[in-house]
Length: 88
Image 1 (cartoon, rainbow, N blue to C red):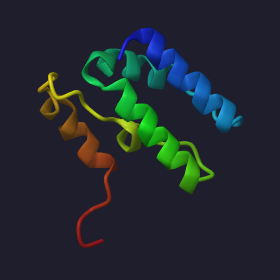
Image 2 (tube, one colour):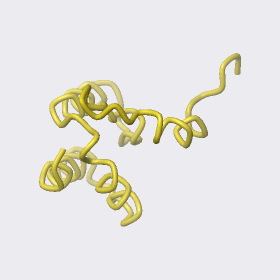
Image 3 (cartoon, helix red, strand yellow):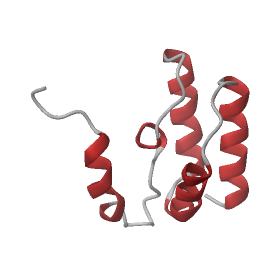
């Protein structure tokens, strides 16, 4: 994704979830990892999320890495903190 695509994503999220105003840290995080993400897949995940949830999505719900990035492991470790624990 490009930075322009990240901005487009946040504008769309804010239109659908008007009470969701992302913190600057969230936007900065997306900018840090945007080159690794596949825009088409992220938008598809957002559309799927919007159909089933009245709440704004988390990064982990939208993130889809491009097959060429090959850097999924650099983010996976911190994502584990926010995923439901197995067996819980």
